[in-house]
Length: 343
Image (cartoon, rainbow, N blue to C red; front, top):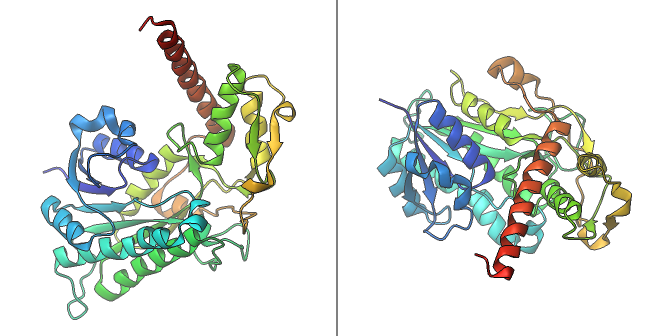
C-alpha cells in the first residue's frame, strides 16, 4: 500500500511543492484545511484531483486528533504557520498560538493516536513528524554560518514562537520516543511565494514597472542579508529527514549570503532596467528589530541526507521575475478586455 502523508499548510508555498513531490514519490497525500474559504487554494488547484482533504485547525486540539485518527498517516508534515515575520509584531498573540502552541497540538494529536506515553517510550515507530523550524530562531546570530548547534536568539515574536515549536518537538522525541524532527530551513522562495515577502514584492514590482503599470518600488533595509534558496529544493530535504533511521534535526540552506540590494539588482537586470531609477527607501518598512546576517551551514544535511540545491540565487530571482512578467501581462490584458467590453 502507498504511504500516507498529512500536510498542514498544504495551500502554502512549501505545502504545494511538498504535495507535488510526495505524489511523484507514490504517496497518498492528505491536506489539512480549515474550512472551505482558503484564499490560496489556487496554489494546489491543478493537484486537487490527486489529493485528499480533512478539516482541522491548529487552534483546535479535538479537530487535530480527529484528523490524524481519520487519515492514519505514516508521516505528518507541520508546515502551517503565520509565516510573514513583520506581521508577528502586529499580532504576537495569534502568532504564538499558531506557530508555537499549534505545534504542541499537532504533536499531541500524533501522540494520542499512536498511544504514546512516557511510561512506554517507543523507538521511533508509528507516525513520523516533521516540524518546519526557521532560521529566524537564530536572530541576533552568535556565529556565522549557523549550524544545528548554534544557539538561538530570536528577534521577533515569529522567531520566538518558532523556537518553542522547535524545542517542543525535540521534547516529544526525547520524552515519548516519537520520531519527530525539525528542519531549520533558511529563506526559500519561488514564484508561489506570497506577495508580502520581500523577494516576491521585488519581482512583482519589477514586472509591473517593466510593463508600465507602476513607477516605484518601496523597500526598507537594503543591507539585510539572507541565505535564499528555491522552495522546490527544500521540500525534498523535508521528505528525506523522515526517511532516516534516527530522528535528528537538520539545517537546510545554500551556505551563500545575498543582500536585499543583490536581489533588487538581479531582478531589475533581468528586464534591462537600472534599479536606482525606481527604488525608494521607506523607513516605515524597516523591522523594529532586524536580523542582519543569516547564513546556513548545511554540511550535515548534505552528508547524511545526500541533499543538495539545484537552483542558485540568480536563477531563482530570474525565474520569479519571468513568472511575474507572465502573470502581470495576462492580468493587464484581461483588464483591458473587460474595460473594452470584449469579454
